[in-house]
Image (cartoon, rainbow, N blue to C red; front, side):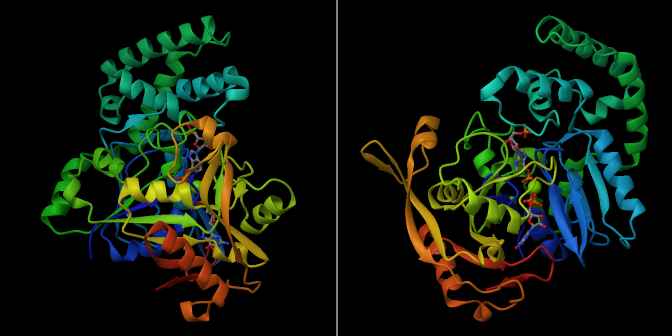
Amino acid sequence: MSNTCIIGLQWGDEGKGKIIDVLANEYDIIARYQGGGNAGHTLVINSEKFVFHLIPSGILHAGKKCVIGNGVVIDPCLLLEEIAGLNKRDTGEIGNLFISDRAHIVFPYHKKLDLLIEKQKGDLMIGTTGRGIGPCYTDKIARTGIRVTELYHKEYFKDKLKKNIEEKNRLFVNVYNAEPTSWEEVYKEYSDYAERLRPYVCDTLELMANAARDNEKILFEGAQGTLLDVDFGTYPFATSSNTGASGALSGLGVPPHRVHKVFGVMKAYSTRVGSGPFPTEIEGEEGDQIRAKGGEYGATTGRSRRCGWFDGVATRHSVRINGVDSAVITKLDVLDDRETLKICTGYRSGNKVYENFPADLNILSDCEPVYEELPGWMADTSQVREVRGLPQNAVHYIQTIERYLGLKIEMISVGPERSQIMRR
Ligand code: GDP
Ligand code: IMO
Ligand code: MG
């Protein structure tokens, strides 16, 4: 078995959490490499629901090493809440958590700035999760961010935090007409978080290097989806990290040859939370029905997810960029009562049909999708556990997507539970 990178092929929420949980048993290490508290990865085990924002989704497997890599931006308050939440529940023995000393920290001023920037954008707001992700990555790139390791040098941390907050306060007061923040309180609060997180903090580069030496198998856990990638997504309606397989390298400090397989997760239809172009969006009653059946409400913010038909153009773009080897299709069951299904195979704009995903948001926003229509199966698939038990039209739907993407769909998920999955 090889090291596998699990990534979302759409706009996030494809069911990555469930798939990681299902596969975790076959690996030694489950490692998050980018994003932060904006992620919401759901696991449902015997009707009990767990949502992880920062903790890797393999944590419910006893003895597995769960790593939060240097590429993740960590809100320590949220992480401590997640740890406390896990400890409170009767989950049995869980995995061991390791936090990179190189990861950047999300501070209250990042979250405040996230909301203020959004508000100022008005109609052009991204619809961020408000978790401070953009401002924290901005500071990282501007080289003013504070890393986990710095929390443990008291005087140095105090001076740097004070400077950062003074600078942010100038922005809050002079640009955004908002209240300034007191650095003393933040210093106290974060010094306390630092002590509580100390047992988990380590040099994860060493851990990953030792894993290579010892032939331990790694499951890389991507957050968000490729269409939210800061380079390849619908920029600027994107997140602030590289969500694809390339992010695993920089976000954990592993060399390229150690990612042996890229496994894509995609829903049988499309969803997106927040603003930005969505060519196959279904407005009105049919979209509402899919949202209701699919429970399409954000795991992090509770916002309604916009729903649309399977977008072959956008998903093929994700497959190509990431060199996806094979994939899982999730939420097939949500389409059980659709009489007709549509797969988008092109975007018509002016007198041109685009078969490759364009960078130009004007095309993405105004294009008319070209659809291939397929008959639905009008039968319950949620109880099916073997591919040969699937209705013929469901198999046809999956094969059509496979053919279009040039990709093998290795697994099919028909419900949120661990057991509701089949391998081909
Ligand atoms: P992630 O961010 O990619 O981990 O996905 P989310 O957890 O945000 O959203 C996926 C939602 O779909 C969660 O509520 C899952 O419990 C649920 N889910 C996952 N796979 C399936 C499936 O095959 N069928 C149905 N009906 N729900 C699923
Ligand atoms: P998981 O890992 C779906 C979206 C936000 C917004 C944009 C930017 O659960 O799939 P940000 O807070 O990152 O600056 O917001 O990205 N977004 C997600 N959408 N799933 C996610 O994560 C997301 N993380 C961010 O809704 O449109
Ligand atoms: Mg999610």
